Image 1 (spheres, helix red, strand yellow):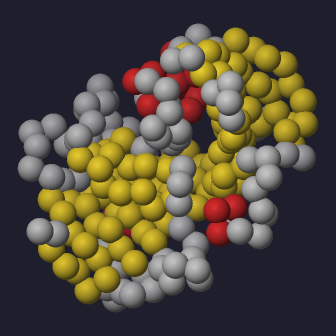
Image 2 (cartoon, rainbow, N blue to C red):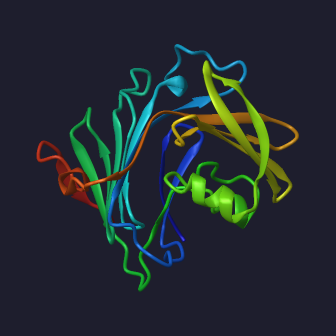
Image 3 (cartoon, rainbow, N blue to C red):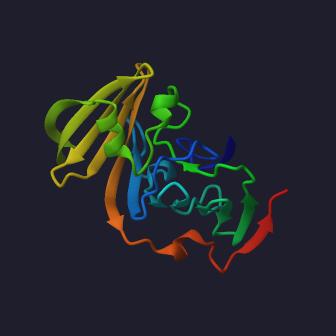
Length: 212
């Protein structure tokens, strides 16, 4: 499996050449999300929102906010088998083509934690994952200032909890490994959108460099 990169600081990975999905969703999902953890400075770059668009298992756009400390503005675009790692600040993009027979884009919510089951929990597939894994209803309450109903399960030795808002959309997904606990909170979660294919091409303003 080829590592496309880690653009969302220390907690988000994107992998290419994962096993293909059984079916391709022709609609687009749009998410704006942020990392939530005890002790995280709310004014830090790590706490800034990220934005993602997905269409099926082939198309991905993942963009972060400008990082003044590192002097970069990161963007990943996958239009498999084509992939671009882009710095919008430098206006440069590195282009790579996957040469495998089975092209797929996998974006786990909690990369490098647990085993294969936890890695199967992906952005855009949260509701399906918890349903298929037989998650138990854990009641409702106020999470992050919003009322939500919790679904909980334990897999790969870790506890996963999905909080679903009263509108039926994911609001937060949390993980507890027994040693640490953190979560992804969705400020925007829109599914079933008509795809905007222009999102999955690199901006014309960047210089494209071929990967070696």
